[in-house]
Image (cartoon, rainbow, N blue to C red):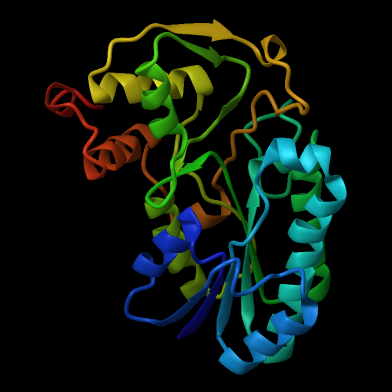
Length: 286
């Protein structure tokens, strides 16, 4: 199987290259393949002639998307359409990586066919990207996920420990979802594309928590004793709104036998892999 990855230097792209070992994989960085350039995207994908295109490239800066919604639509929606059109021309299937933020956070957990009512520009651009893929290419997988972290990027666990080193933390309790390790997500996507069962899927580590609870588990596992103050989104001067509870239910992939383990187990392995797991926490981790 020949697989082409967009956004290959991002944290999910890096994990996918490892998860897809044994297949013929070509990963393009953002600089090498700008998905907003339709002609170039078509040229590259036709030349590579993949069986599957995994479209990871995206603009995920929520604040940036809110300030520049036109750019968000250009990169996340029009870019997805460009990739889908090129994949169709090459006779390839496509995986579009989407987000929990296509939902408004009022009726969690969300099934794959739940109504999408995004609250912010990032979520709207990703919902538009989903629509573009559906309209363009029947052989597609829409994979919604949430709160990614993993090798190749300084993400929430690392930022939490860095902030803890400077003193106390202020963390929100009114943003709830499922922290998802890119290593586990990549393995699930690898299994999914073998099924050829196209459609929408929710692939997240199981369970859910608030940002505060996530940070507290990071600190516990790392053996760091720093207090975390409970606050809400309203306590920060944010240019956007996040859904309060956008937990995703993995219904369709579970039928295929594809599930992801508890988020705490994955977090422990991530901290161990990055050398941040405290010895005393290792024997106590759930």
